[in-house]
Every structure is written in structure tokens, then in C-alpha cells.
Length: 401
Ligand SMILES: C[S@@+](CC[C@H](N)C(=O)[O-])C[C@H]1O[C@@H](n2cnc3c(N)ncnc32)[C@H](O)[C@@H]1O
Image (tube, rainbow, N blue to C red; front, side, top):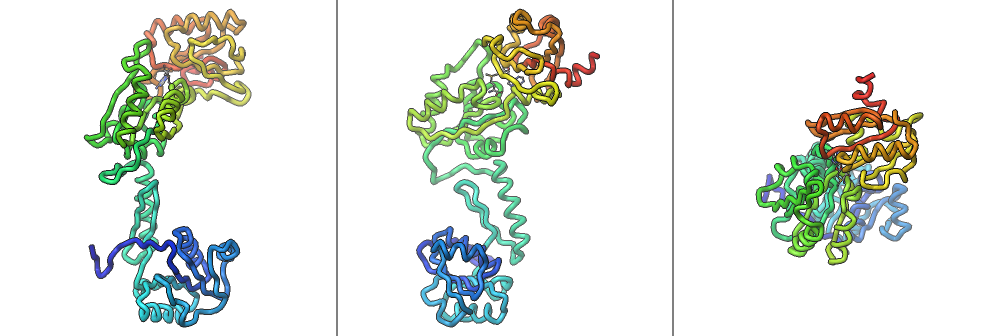
């Protein structure tokens, strides 16, 4: 491809001599990024910046402490000139032209024979943008493309050269796709296979390419259609086929999500696995109902349990919030156990069903009344139950006073 006499390409500078003439801001940035790319960098300048002199003391850069002289370009593959003197920059450009060395010329794209694009690196993708000679425009465009790549808004899937397969255990948050992390979204944009739970944000599936394999292993309470060991086998099998596998889970993978078991299974099978934390329903669903799990002067801590646990082992006080997951069917037994353990029967309780979704419903009461209210409205999973003084901060509680 050639546009207006320009031909874009990237240079393998590692182990090759590159000369940077100048010691100011532009020269410093260029020299340091060339060092990072493995080039053998010589800087020619009487004065250099602090960053350059640190690189010189580390032995990363060879410094000729004087003004430019003809012959400094001998053996170089590339030169950057960025001095404060247009005459020196011009001389370097002329010498480079005579020696057939590509020349990057700071602030003078017309006379340069090479241009460096604005670059963003996201995972193994490199995006290089030229702004038609306008560096500010190139940087702004580069930032836009980088942000879209970070967010998974652009197709990141490998088409031909494929890295080794791997598994990402991604916390999908409590259901609203807006609560999925940027890292999670990016991995979804790269995924060949998505293995999704019932409470994960199914809305994001619409954004996947048609050929992405989607496996719904959705579990209903007390009904596990795909047993855990089979899910583990699926993850390992697809990764071994060289695929990027996203295991999209509800909330955070490690909060009652069996993420730890999946991690161990993958590791034992020698499959590379990454864990992306998610927004847990234990905190986010309470927040969606206007309940902070801790609040100065009301609650100094919180415990997250499944209601099946021995709840009375948690700190017993209205100043310590208890958040129950998966417990809506056993609410009456739980409340009786808490009162029998000495908790005030008037301790506020909230049930939040389908939190962070358009179907969210909040019901409030006390340890004495909440089970009856839950029965009356037919409360059903998924629901989070919050017990403690912080419930009084919710608009639903305040509406009942
Ligand atoms: C198997 S646990 C998984 C929890 C998840 N790993 C997390 O961090 O949120 C499932 C329980 O999470 C709670 N839950 C998840 N999403 C919810 C939502 N959108 N609204 C209410 N509760 C939710 C319910 O208590 C549900 O029974």
C-alpha cells in the first residue's frame, strides 16, 4: 500500500545502530523507546535530559557529549534529529539522505524521510496511526482506537495466527452489562468460546460474532443441569483445541462462584488460566437498593454468607451487616435462628430480587416480619438478603416510616 508517496512499515531495530541527535524532550522520548525496542542507541548532544543521563549510566545508551559531526551517522540504520538548531537538524537530514539512512526530523515532517506514527499496544495488538502530518490529531485518533480496543468494542479475535488456548474466568457482575469490567469485555471480544452461567449478563452475548461458540451451563437452584466436573472438562477441552475460552460467571468468580475449583482444574490440566474479578452481587445488589454494606456510625463491617451456612457464627449485632446469598427459600429458618441467637427481633432486613436489572424488587421488614412479607409477594431467586442497621438507609425502608 502506498499513500501519497509514503509506505507504512515497522522496523526491527533490535541490535541495530540508531542515532539520536539532540538531548531534549523529543530526543529523550525517541531514544528511550528505541532502547525499549532493543536498538543500539547513540545520542549526540552537549546537554542531555535527566532521563537520558540515567539511561547512559545504566549503559543503555552511548552518549557523544558534543555537537553533531559529519560521520556520526556511520553504520546507522536510522537517525532521529531533534535539536534546538534548525541548521543542525538540516545538516543531519542532508547527511542521512546522502548515506541512504532514514531520517526522522522533529517538527519538520516535510523534510523528513521517515515518520513515527502514534502507537498504542493492547495485549499483542499494535495500532499505529498517522494523522497526515498532524501529530496531535494522530495521538487523539490513537487514543480513541486504544480506548475502543481496551473496552472490547473492536473485533480482537485472532483469525489466522492463534496463540495457545487459554481460559479466562471472568466475573460478569450481577446482570447489568454495564457492570462488566473493561478487561472482561476485552476478553469477550477475543473469545472463541463463551461458557456462561444463568446469572451472568446474557445481554453481552448479542455482541459476539456469529461463529463464537456459546455454551449455557446455567444452573437453577437445586438443579444443576451441567455438573461442575463437566464444566471443568469443557473449559480444558476447548482451551486444548487452541481456543480463547471465556467462562462468564455471575458476580465475582470467587464469591460462591466455584471459580477456585475451575482455576485448579485448569492448572492441573496445564491450561493457562486468567481470573478477572467481577462486581459481586453481595455489595452491588445492596447498593442498587440504596444500601451501603458499611456506613459510618451504623455498620463497621459485613459478612457474606449463603443462608445454608451456620449463620449464628457471624458477628451478631445490628452494627455488623449480614449479606445472604442464595437464601431466599430458607428465610424463615434463618430469621428464627438469628433471633434465637439473641438478635433484636426489630433488626431491619431487606430482600432485593433481581438486583441491578429492570426487574429489581426491594422488600423491607424486620427479623420478625420479613419472612411473612417474602411469602406474601412470592419472593424468588436470585435475591440478596441484607440484615442490619444499614437497611434503614434504603429509600424502600424510609418510604415505610
Ligand atoms: C451462586 S451465587 C453466585 C454469586 C456471585 N458469584 C456474586 O459474586 O455475585 C448466586 C447468588 O448470588 C445472588 N445474586 C446474583 N446475582 C443477583 C442479582 N442480580 N440479584 C439478586 N441476587 C443476585 C443470589 O443470592 C444468587 O442466589
